[in-house]
Amino acid sequence: MRIEKIFFLCDAPEFAQLRLQDPSTTTMEGLIAFNKHLLFVMTIIVVLVGWLLFATISNYDEFNTQKSQSFFHSNALEIVWTSLPALTLLNLASPSFTLLYSMDEISTPEISVKIIGHQWYWSYEISDFDTMATCMDSDKTLKYTCYLLTEESISQKNYLGFFRLLETNKRVLLPSNTHLRLLVTSVDVLHSWAIPSFGVKVDACPGRLNQVNVFLKRIGMFFGQCSEICGVNHGFMPIALLVVPSIQYHYFVVSKLF
Image 1 (cartoon, one colour):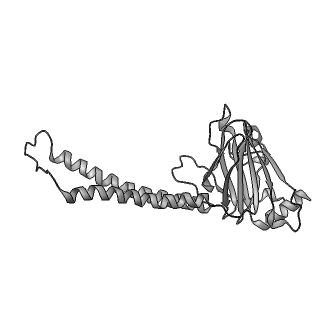
Image 2: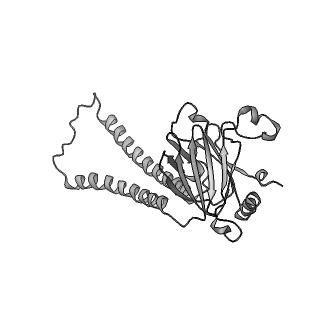
Image 3: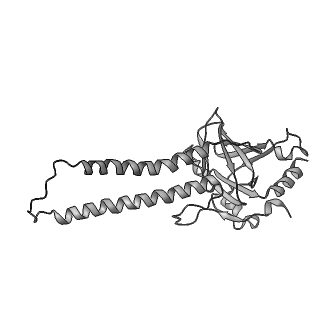
């Protein structure tokens, strides 16, 4: 059985989707956890401020002529309304900085993936197969050129069940449980390579390499799109990745390059 036919669809946008996609990296797990923490704190603040506004409107309207109590000075009150917002911001900043640090952390990659943005498609060069050094020439490189799969092609029998505007003519194969280094650049204008399930969004700038490390924790199909307006066909630059077990990827690379 061809390895390209073995996939498990697990991460794709849904109609009227409100939740985040399932995480496939530690980075995305951290982003989801921080999002939940942020929403919890925001809910408390909204309820507190809403209650204060409601109490003020209810007790002091145009028909209530009773003189309100006057405050000229209160050290305790000043300490509370200064320290409470500061502690709240600290509570939000601490996990945020931790997450930012972990996203920039560089580990020793086993495979390097060079991602090149074009108007309006993506190309990939995969090299540095350190884990396969005993059976491969280090100069060997896998190359993909991935264009949008048109609706006419999807309607054909071989592509039934594929996603409109998300599928490409080739699916980039990557191994799971492997440290990957993504090097992103562009040959013409600004692009942005983004995969929601990875928690990754990397700008593709002409003449510059941007780097990010990912560790894919599970197999499946993962989709993304260009996230930087780059011209008339900006909305037609999909990303389709197929993540398979490492041993399966090993066999695929050997069969392709030898």
